[in-house]
Image (tube, rainbow, N blue to C red):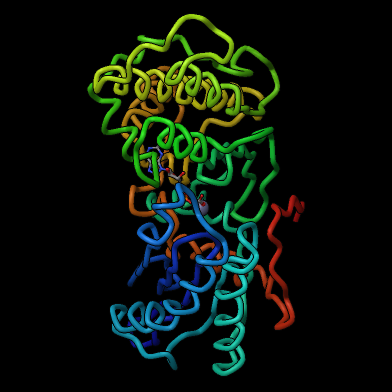
Length: 348
Ligand code: KG4
Ligand code: ZN
């Protein structure tokens, strides 16, 4: 692009769960601004996201967040060349707020509207971090709502290899945090407390680890932590008192069990899909112990590992830069495009 040609700018919006986010990304995938308004304080006392509260908060925040993203990018609304928005998967009311804002802007500015899959965008965060093409690869998205393994053939071709059969890994972190008397979201707090505990203190189950299927299950692990903390129903043995050290040991042993399974399944998926690059994104990928274990595995097996940078692990709109990939391929969305709360497993 010659220097006298105006920059081409994409405005990306994200409102699939409890983060209201907007970002401006140029055609070279350079993130010019990324604004995230979290709602954690609104959901904390419920121990999880309350959908109705989330959508109301998105309505209040979306316009100031968009304004701030455009301002920080040093741009004007009229400079925007395309609008990307997460339309799937997520909470229906939350997704609708982002989509309505995106449609309105696309119509008023007369620019293309690009409907983005939120989970695929989590993996695209790795491409932004690398600053070059990272496909084909195996991709793991491990968040509060999803634990999905993909064969990523290109930035627009994702084949689901396996997923959780019950809870997502992040959800397990949040529920276990509740059991241990910690706040929401539980992941970062479990990580902090686990640092003082013994990961081998309690041998929690590693469901499906030895199984060939690339699926996950965390609900048995969650129940095992509950019983270890509060006692097994019907048992005469009283539970070990929940001292600070016991809480740290439970947190560390739980975290170790989740990480063993996640890392083991990535290794299996790389072999099965015959890929030598691994992309990891989603909120749980912010966990340092997990990042270190992935790095060890990648070094041992000669795999190129790209983990999304921490600020792009949890929900954000910069990863909506995947919209450029759709635009490059002429995959626009009509203005009557709808949201889809469940994961769409389409083959493009
Ligand atoms: O990707 P994300 O922001 O939202 C969804 O799309 O779900 O992920 C949020 C999840 C929460 O369950 C949170 O507890 C978890 O990511 N999480 C972590 C850490 N930071 C966030 N889990 C483990 N360790 C962390 N450091
Ligand atoms: Zn997410």
